[in-house]
Image 1 (tube, one colour):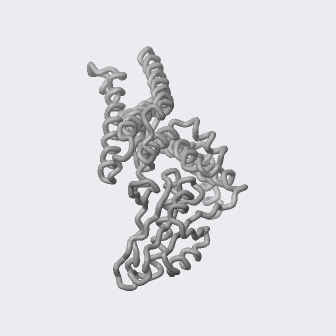
Image 2 (cartoon, helix red, strand yellow; image 1 turned 120 degrees about the horizontal axis):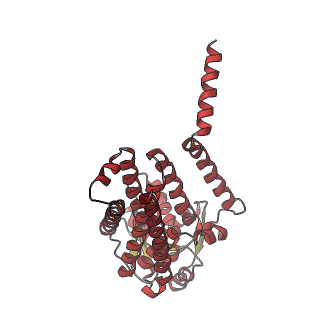
Image 3 (cartoon, one colour; image 1 turned 180 degrees about the vertical axis):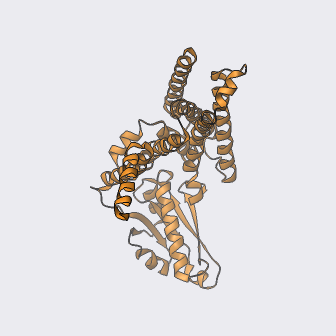
Length: 348
């Protein structure tokens, strides 16, 4: 009797789950993501990170680095030749060990180990930095005996924190979508949107105000991230313009989603899918030519690349003209769709 009751409950819940889009998306999303990763990497071996090392002596650090299985260590005593390899992207980073580095570490001086990189390889270089710091930490078990300092082959210092700024900015720019869509849907769920429409405010004005709020908050959040992480680098004008156009696009997109999605549950599910749609192809673009081709169709790719190129390569504004044009055209298109939906609803 108990088993029959339990089976009946399970059957009822399974029937409702199949009808519930949120449940379906919750199962389908990880399946789709795992399939995407497997398709990208199925025919590829995990490439080793190429690390050049110049040493004034036979330091034990060289032997420790060689034990890292995903490193390909290239010893090059000529510093200028080694820097040329970095600049030409033949290696992902160059670690320069000072003279008597072992003696300095044993004396507790914590010498600086310079890690030279090419900005186009900054993400892989940041992995190098993290792995090297972990190796140094494990070699002593307490405070790392040396300090890794990441530098460009032609100038400024960088850290793994600096390399992550474009992704943090991208998340913040996308935040405009979540702010606007959630606000509109919450008004609909609480039946307060209808109450607002009784006032002289019309629906286009209300949505424009919500979109402007999301835009302002996401822009302010981006500026805070740049300020806290010393991210005002390279072409600052280009960086700020990319952030502004990106925030405008995602705020408009948030208004559209808020108009189309019926409830908060659907919004959360769709928001996760939309985030994955915009983020995963960009994150995997370097791993697969096919994924790169797909990523280039998305506005998120041009937001991220515009931020990255402005900060680390200092490209001029004219080099970002396609990025701006593509984002502005998409923003105008989404805005027009919003107006079309609003006109239809107000005429009903």
